[in-house]
Length: 66
Image (cartoon, rainbow, N blue to C red; front, side, top):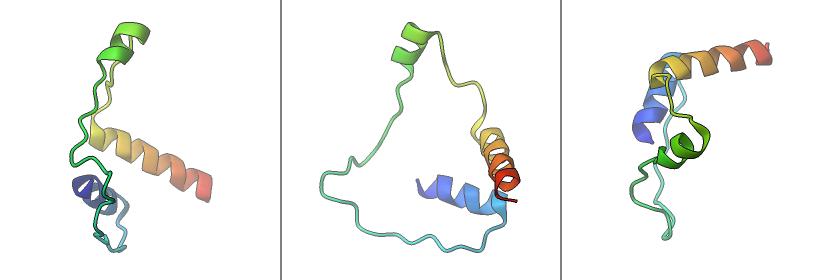
């Protein structure tokens, strides 16, 4: 999540600070998305690289918030 937050700050040019806080006791230590079910049942798999998807998402929200 830290890497993702850092990418968003870099791509947006934001000077926001990332604040690290202790995880809740029941929070999983590591998430590993599994797309097998979506691919099998829906014929769907992610196809957009992360940086490209973030740029498109940021552009969308900038246009909406103007």
